Length: 501
Image 1 (cartoon, rainbow, N blue to C red):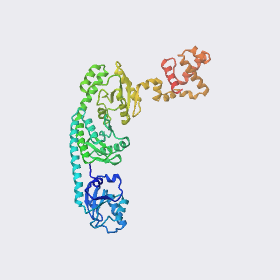
Image 2 (cartoon, helix red, strand yellow):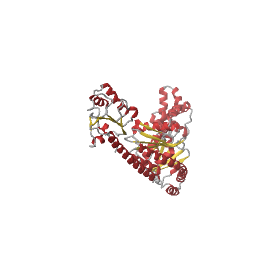
Image 3 (tube, one colour):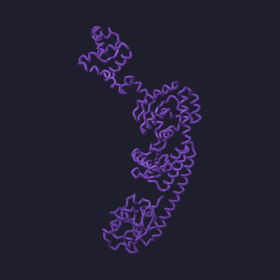
């Protein structure tokens, strides 16, 4: 527990009395040291958090109010925690002008009576500071041992970060070498209102390409520290909580950064090899060797998601900086999510519990992701083609399910892909005809196509002779320059009418 004004006032061995009306924050502000001075301006010799003791030699018996106010304001501007004013030495009481000035400047004024030795007050606070320092050092040693134990567990990096978060009661965020936030399940994340500010400073640090750290005051004094050597930065660690980190907390973060740097370097080579094995597992599954793939995955990673699961294709993701590292963290439980490179894309097998994580990753990194449902006994190669097709239709930062495309049908897919433009181009020659004639030809074409090209039923539906209908369709062929005797031409005309007619 740190030394505070309240600590001093509560100790009955000191004849102290508060003359102003400090609030709880002022009373509980930690004291960094106690200093004595009778200078009119002692600020060059003080620091924030100091308690200043004086016998008042700098003040007359009835000091000027403006002079006293300027004195108190100088102390408060520096962050001095309070002024202890000794009486029965030079002044019988603390001058009223000093008390009023302390009240106006929000500087606690404490009377020290009975010629109480300043050295006793200084030693009292110094002993508390020393005890607090020893306690924090003991805490730091215990904390460093806990972090070291976490480092040797199976998922060392995540365990290190989780231990750091618990010990500091703080949120912890890990960023890759390009500033992308790496998601780690179970890790306490930064509040949404500060994450954007922290992310900007993370990218600013990475742009310098040198090892550095900074504090983000607007994000609750979060500490942001690069990981790796200058010129070879591996990422950034950001830590924040309700209170700024003290020296022991900052030392613990430095220890974690060192361990994280080693862990990331070690993982880089291992992950490169394991990614090759992951790709091989996907190839085995696609080629129909499911039993072999599962045996390999079980021995190398601990298993695969159990059917049914989603087959996901992340378009062009293989070359995105840091994405594979993030997927390694997100898919640390292979029975929940399994990922592998395949060409320029990344293939993801995601169980039901991981679907939301995949969607969040797509939104955060601006990915185009397509998915298809894979049931036991389904052809994975076919599901992969479906997911790939859905990925081509997906918007940036979103997941597109193949079932959504299939539900819209071929015409819906053509419409989504700009089919109306092609349809209007095919039908444009009809615009040269009078409106009545154009509508008559289009209506006749629709009825004739709905009748599968049968003349008599179509003519009856239109209430005209079949020869009249033949003449209209011949005119349509001539205007559009198509031959409706072929099925392909009829299908193209039907699609054009559906999309743009």
